[in-house]
Image (cartoon, rainbow, N blue to C red):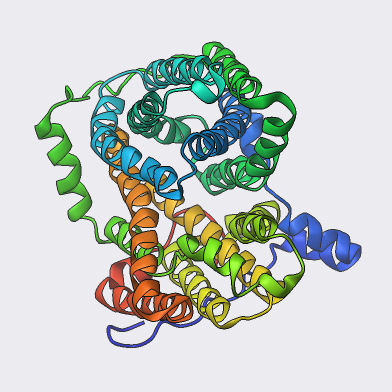
Amino acid sequence: MTDGDPPDPPDLPELEPAVAATSQRGGLGGLLRRHALDLRPLRHREFRLLWSGQAVSFMGSQITYIAVKFQIYQLTRSSLAVGLMALCELVPLLTMSFVGGALADAADRRRLFVRAEVALTFVTVFLLANSLLGDDAWIWPIYVLVAFAAGLDGLGRPSLWALVPRLVDKEELPAATALHSLYVNLGAVGGPALGGLLIASLGLPGTYALDVLSFAVSLATLRLMKATPPPDDAERPSLRSVAEGFRYARSQPVLMGTYLIDFNAMVFGMPSALFPELAANRFAASGLAEATVYGLLAGAPAAGALVGTLTSGWVRRVRRHGLAIVWSVVAWGVAITLFGLSTSLWVALPLLAVAGAGDFVSATFRSTIWNQTIPDKLRGRLAGIELANVASGPLLGDLEAGVVSRLAGPRVSIVSGGLACLAGAGVLALLLPEFLRYRSEHGGET
């Protein structure tokens, strides 16, 4: 396309000859095989170990996150006290993500991630010990531990993200990202529900204890993996090395496009802070309990992303990743706008699921662009920048949605946010033509 013209809609991916023949002969069976989740990355032993351990650990972490919120509310009976968790998390996560990125480029990434996981295990152990006090548990250590855990996540997660490209073939990176999304979305859907059941049946100490066991599984799989030493030309971690990562990101329009378009979608099109109000008021006539409606609203985007993950076999045939990201953000913005107008819960939930599926597509191709274009010696620092981006966007989105809702009501907040997301995507597509034209070296002809 030329500058100033609207982007052309993406062509539908053509069936590869063998797949097309299979689809014609097998009908629905061939279609299902074509779109089924690509499991090829799991043939690599190191990736298989990492993936299986993190799948267990992430579910445990999601359960603990729900348990911490529940415990804070039980101790304080204050939603504000629960909301302060986000403030405790934001600063350590943003700060340490840059440090973790620099360390990931200068040290053995597996070893660094192991150390972060060990420290996180002790955080959960301390939460377990505090919960044994019951109603006499102290509130301030929970905030301290939440902040400490966020900082450790910032230290360790860039190493995890930078590790994956070393474990699979380059053309398998979209599939590896989809497999990562599989356990993330399973955890996002199942973690809150399972956490509630565990708290009711085992109590808070038993729930925290299960998370300790999940970390044990993760550490066992990491111990079985081979070392991943840093590149020979790795720099020592320093402020200068962190600044080099920022300079590299600014010099790459395609990378900047991935950061900016996602930040735009999360700040303007992320109305999750309004879900409790919508559950109590707009969707009160659904006949379901308020808490149930809230849980359905919170889990619907992840459910849509999960469906997208399970039908993601087509992503390996797409080459125009920048254009695919733009259209996925458009799908997100349209779905959120229509969600803001909906008055029926049974219309609202599918719209949120569509938004979640769009977010999955965007995340898949953004991650693939990073892994295919960033030099290995800079991958950790760029992962730290991305972590800061994805962590701050939703929190600022909650703030934006809450402020506009307070001034003009939830309907205006959600609809205006969805429209702003669409406008922002269009402006960024025009300002970053290199991002829009980006083609992967691997994939099909789409």
